[in-house]
Image (cartoon, rainbow, N blue to C red; front, side):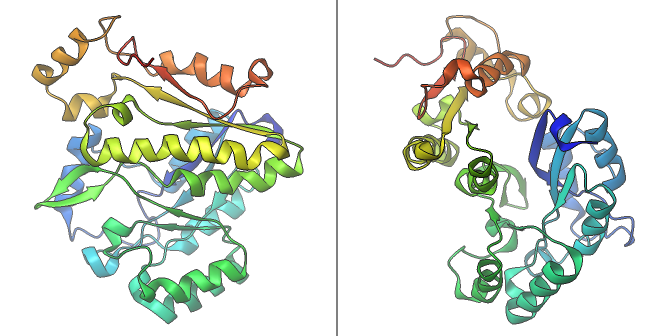
Length: 304
């Protein structure tokens, strides 16, 4: 497939099942919590995931999460993902995940994965990996990443699934890091447009989730000024309540109805309701528009 034929690139795709290693049932309560949150117990293999994206002409960046120290669960091999990326280099990029608790051994692994396996970036999940992003134990790995000028994604945000009282963050990835993955490509081609996903939760009381989305808004506005000179525009959409399998599994009807009562258009949005605004912000029709957060919310939020 010619990369110019891709209609989108998903830069956050998890490898769910290893075909190299036997299934590790340790920590199965996490799987059950994830089943409930996402409304499905179906976990595709890497090959099945790639085939799904290829059929839809969508590129992907895939990674696992190495949290062996915190969760005690065997990771999916980084090498397995790297091999899949080599076989599907026309539409797939492999990122690696290395538990920061591995320190210098982790740094050695990072160097090897870059040199021998063609890894193009790294994924960190501080909540699940049990460390803080500025913890010195992670610095040896960071130094390797910095030396090779590789991008890194840090998962941040609110709790989606809960396992034995331990909140696993499934909310918002570090939007800033995602943007910086694509900026060199956009600069090289003379410009581009980025649309971040925020939420109306940024304007309501929504705990850490609302705080994270307010951060997305701020990044959008600051980055818009930083990169405008390169012909790059940065905007965001802020969806209101959207009807998805995930939302239905975590928001009871009794909680949803008062939210709908407060909308001007009294129904939940559908994912398709977001497409038009996203395409509009990506188009040349908005060539003089940057740094804006546009609500697509059925009239939920009114701002003067």
